[in-house]
Length: 84
Image 1 (cartoon, rainbow, N blue to C red):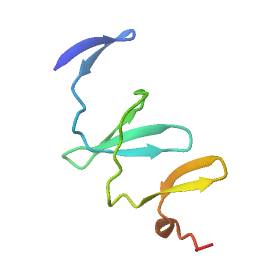
Image 2 (image 1 turned 90 degrees about the horizontal axis):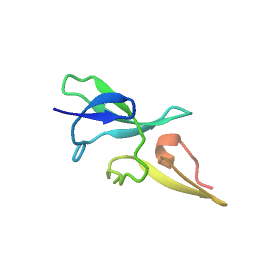
Image 3 (image 1 turned 90 degrees about the vertical axis):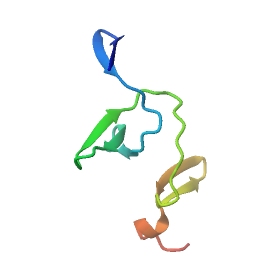
Image 4 (image 1 turned 135 degrees about the horizontal axis):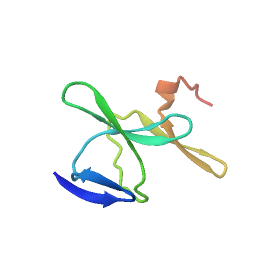
């Protein structure tokens, strides 16, 4: 595994291309969670400023438009939202 100087630290580095994970938001921070082969998971702080993301068909996600706000959240069915 390669090592690089990352800020004031020496870091091990490996490519992330092709890794599947999920974006999580804890109310303050957004992070990327990857499931490990043993069933545990690893959370990564997001510092990449223009990362491309494709939402999986089974993600149960929807876009909501409120006046000038655009929101990505769970689908209405998951949230139990009634029709307007």
